[in-house]
Image 1 (cartoon, rainbow, N blue to C red):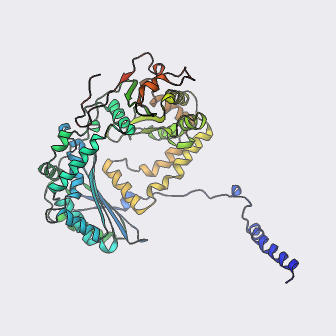
Image 2 (cartoon, rainbow, N blue to C red):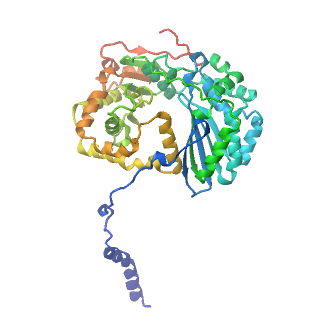
Amino acid sequence: MRRREWMKAAAGTLLAPAAWAEEEGIPAHPNDLEFSKLSYDPPKPADYRHELPGGAAAYVVEDHQLPLIDISVTIRTGGYLVPREKAGLASFTGSQIRAGGTKTIPAHEFDEQAAFLASSISSNIGGTSATAALNCITQNLQPTLKLFFDMLKNPGFDPERLRLATARRLQAMQRRNDRAQGVERREFARLMRGDEHYSTWQTTKASVEGVTVDAMREFHASYYHPGSMIFAVAGDIETKEILEQLGGELREGWPMQSKPEVAAVPVPKHEPSAGVYMVDKPELNQSRVAMGHLGIRRDDPDRIAIGIMDHILGSSGFTSRIMMRVRSDEGLAYSAGSSFRPGIYYPGTFRAGFQSMNARCVQAATIVLEELARIREEKVTEEELATAKNASIETFPRFFATAGAVARTFASDEYTEREEGYWDKYRDRIAAVTRDDVLRVAQKHLHPDKLAILGVGNVQEMLAGNPDKPDYQFSKLAGGSEIQRIPLPDPLTMEYPDG
């Protein structure tokens, strides 16, 4: 083929896809693409819920794409049931249920059997619930399930494993004042909840060393019972078969015959005090600032509108007002934002915060306050509202993206007694939010006059501020009130020095 003819043929080949696309009606540019309206109907919990012996419930979702099975169980108990002087007992019990083997299988042998099966088995107890979980390949389900239920029913609580766990916990406690983020979370929680609520209790050397095998056995015996359990099961299983297996394990040899009475989660009585609070860590060149007040419960009728408002204000990352002002416009912090989280058992908190160079913290804090004022004084734009609503609506299917997500979502909803039909109405409620709603809930639920502002870092440099911008001062944010110093406590006794 001559060179001229070859080039002509090659050019025709290159042009063919474009010509073909035009004939097929494919747009010339991605911006011209049109998509059909998203249609997604969430699954119904009743389609997956099953009753098990002893009062337990199970949500079972089959998924045969891979030979894997996930099973988790939530137990109605938690650290809130332990008195303050025994802080740590619940969390130790939760971890040692797994770490301590069983009454018939020593701890090291339990670990070896799980490893041989390539199965993951875990257990823990948090503030308001306990969980345990297993993950295994389909062919090893039966032996893994035997280990799992032996652990739940007959934990061994090995004394040597407890001794090692106690030593590790004490070492970690010695460093609890080292990281500014940990100090900020602890002290902000105290400002919101006070010292008398379980959520702010801290372990001490005495409470940790006071955890014994007998105490853990007593705690376990008091609350671990089928009637307090909700299972989430997903993966390569047949529903009928797994229900028979779970039912058999629940029937055999459970030490308690009656469902335990479990006290309600206590509501904090503390009323936060507005003001500016400082914790001094002079070695830091960057400080952390958090500001907030009490919020709402999950069942508040304004919850959806508040979520949209918070998305625009600070919870959406780079599209939020706080992030754009503090980071993009002023370059004062790498990350800044807000979170308005509703509580399940009592009101949650509103919190805004950032980390910045010491001298620049007060300017960044002032900008956050300006954004709080702005969203309370003027309506958000149509574009902001549309972005926030679309983000919430279009990401809705993620709650049910996998079989495991479906099972866990419905199990969690039952445990926390979420309102029936919540997911069916979720997107419609978001779509119904208007600019007037956002303004209304901002005015009703954001309280700049009630803010507790906490700074953790080099207090001297924070208070001095930026000499190039002397108008920004924490004393102005305190409104004439004295800036209150919070001393660091002894890391092992958690006793705070006077002053």
